[in-house]
Image (cartoon, rainbow, N blue to C red; front, side, top):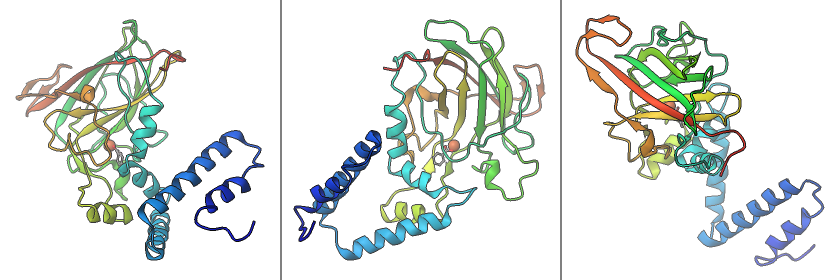
Length: 291
Ligand code: BEZ
Ligand code: FE
């Protein structure tokens, strides 16, 4: 393999991998090489730009640690995360749509009973959330695990505070009742900028893009016999619904969060100030039924 030129470099790299014993790896890597080479030819990538790209990816690596995942952010703002989510969650139109997981989910969040307050001291306007989980044919899904997480009134998740005390705020797990219903108290999520003090933020700036996500509440719903559902519910009046930095908004997930004056909350609590309520029905796809 000598004297490789601009035209023969692509088949040469593909030929070098031909003995790969892993069929899927070979498919993925061959396609990656073909597309990377096509990209470099398409834009006539200069050596200076190649160095800049290596420097950028090095910065992405340097800022990434256990609490900050800049590679996921990069995938999110390039639309790759949402593309992967969408093409792996094809399902009947009646099912609730999926959207990105995001970097603020944490394993091991606290368990709660229906009616509990998940805010656990997080600051924000009170909000009472209720809903129902059902299957595609209308059947209630009892004992589904519902995991929720959200931002506070300043647009931050608990994991973004280095001094978070207690550790888990505005996140938790609960289960649906025999009729598929669930309800809990929390706070109203607010719009927030994705972390933008690193290389991804500088890239957004250079591209004339903003880092904001519209206000939303994250859900991860799991029940035996159904596909897991990772999604959000968005607040319908948010100014960023049509310019979400990570392209995650679906019209079916934009819902009315009703504002109420001071008075009686749905759970009978006397509320001295205004509060919101949200009610939503989630429809799960039976396992093995993806389209
Ligand atoms: C989130 O919704 O938590 C999120 C998603 C993608 C990037 C940053 C945050
Ligand atoms: Fe979020």
